[in-house]
Image (cartoon, rainbow, N blue to C red; front, top):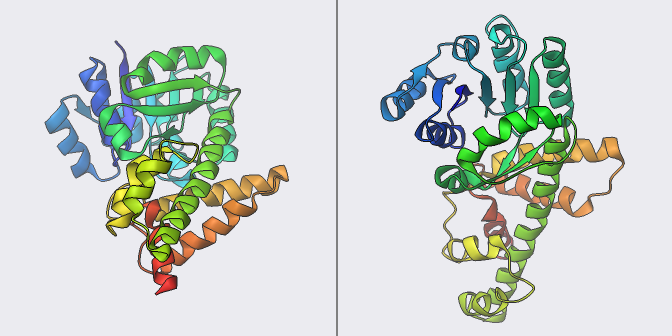
Amino acid sequence: MARVAFLGLGVMGGPMAGHLARAGHEVTVYNRTTAKAEAWVATNGGTLGRTPAEAAKGAEIVLACVGNDDDLRAVCTGPEGAFAAMPAGTLLVDHTTVSAKVTRELSAVASAQGIGFVDAPVSGGQAGAVNGKLSIMCGGTESDYARAEPVMAAYARICKRLGESGSGQLAKMANQIAIAGLVQGLSEALHFCEKAGLDGRAVVEVISQGAAGSWQMQNRYQTMLDDHFTHGFAVDWMRKDLGIVLDAADDLKASLPVTALVDQFYKDVQAMGGGRWDTSSLFKRLRHIAG
């Protein structure tokens, strides 16, 4: 068992840190909203750090799951950041979905201090975090990954190193590209069923058993047809992720026309007041357009 710190106790980080505590690790937590960290400690045990540096002091491995590039820089750097309290030989594992650019930037800062760094964004949503069944895509050295993997196993369905620093973030971008197209395709299929007078549930019962089947189809078609979207991965978060994807695509000269189009569809959903709706609300957009 390890002495670990967990920075960020949102809908993903809170359950993930809980799995670490239940696995027997010695956990210290930090959250920007201290009341949330106090509530986590009251439920899960462990200790509370008032700053990232305080939480990281004495930890062998520090894990982070915050909001965006700027949030990650804030918890890692500066006099109250985790790096300030981490001696050489310790390790930071970042579960935030951020740009590969900031990952490489912070990895270089960590390396200069003798600190290991693994970028390890996750997929599986809130349900995956709660159930400890996340897919984790990792970048970093083989030795740093080998140290991180047994700790991440507390909440992983699968965990895999995909290359050097930034590779995990690039793989997460591929994940979001695939999801964007799948959700739009499913939305259009269900919309077509409605317009054709077909029972969408009956159609999905059949086509989900063939080549059209997907996680999105199995887990979202019923709530889509019921016009229920106050759950799951929020449109605001998806647009943040797709912004990272499209910026990286420009740098790589990769052509992502469908992803760019779906990003604009999500912008339409935000304009409808659906920023906190689940990403499957692309279907609601089609209903709205069709009247």
